[in-house]
Image (cartoon, rainbow, N blue to C red; front, side, top):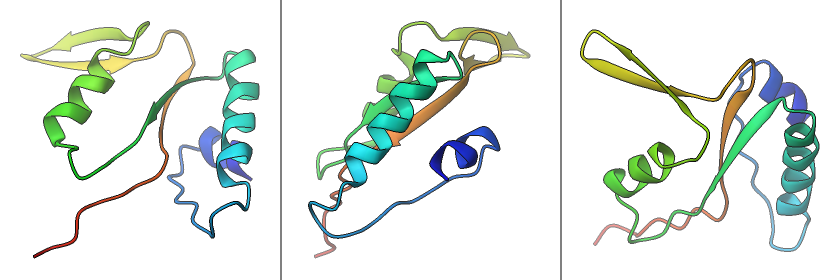
Length: 97
């Protein structure tokens, strides 16, 4: 199911109890699709210290992305027909005070 969501560019939020194998399933699927040159994965972990700037810099510094400039802006994309998959593991956001 995960590989199909990636192929049709459908976002997916997988949640569940600790120790149920979510990370293992995702990593196995991403590894398989990477070896087939279908995707270029970008693994990230959000925490209380995550900022939009830090996240943007992590994506922009991903090796192998092609920069396409157009009318004063730019688009980062993987080479060929590959898809960039941003995988966020362990989303821990701060609670409001």
